[in-house]
Image (tube, rainbow, N blue to C red):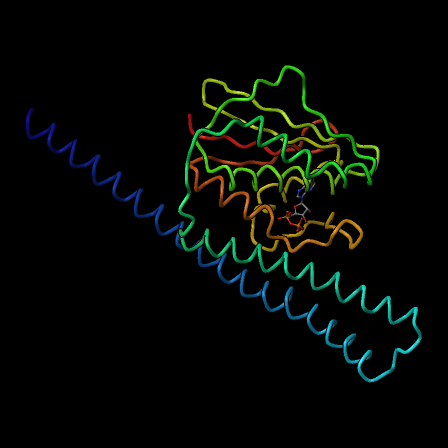
Length: 257
Ligand code: ADP
């Protein structure tokens, strides 16, 4: 009986070790694919706008553009592009810190309600300009979570800003949260019309941009926002998932209890 028990125990341990090794290989392959996507992203998303900026700067320098109105327009576009590229470089930096496992999260008790208020305040001007209503249900009972305030703020801000940008005018973005048997949760729902089922998982991939990608007037993005969201949530030991619900989609974040 003893040798049978030992045999069973060893067998279970070996099976667990094999599952663990397969998981590690799978994770390593995912990271490698992600690194390749990042390199392709840098060469396209940073080099293409740089070429455009150089062409505009040359046109100004060579005097090809010389009337005051066009010159103002060129300078304005140069500054907008420079701002956008600075944001992309910040995102790229954040993602590379996540990939390198170099986040060094400073975890403390954080009120989810405070993080949500900050994200709402930041998103309010763009929501107003797009006639999108921002709401939180009155019953929302915001839990306190163990998290890095800065990184969690980034997660919520990215989700709320995306919802506002991808929801057509006159739509509604709802931010809800609470705590259930599985632990604290936060959900951002919108009325964007839904995401194609096949894309629901891929939206978190580096450089993935759906058919409903942002236009320049909503601040063309680099497709890194949700990859950052997933990386930051997982660094906290949590999960994030997207699904279609009602007239739009719902992004749900779960943090460890
Ligand atoms: P970006 O917004 O810069 O394109 P993201 O990683 O934030 O990059 O999003 C990836 C893609 O997921 C977007 O291009 C869009 O197609 C889709 N998406 C993200 N958030 C939403 C949302 N709230 N509603 C509908 N589609 C969304």
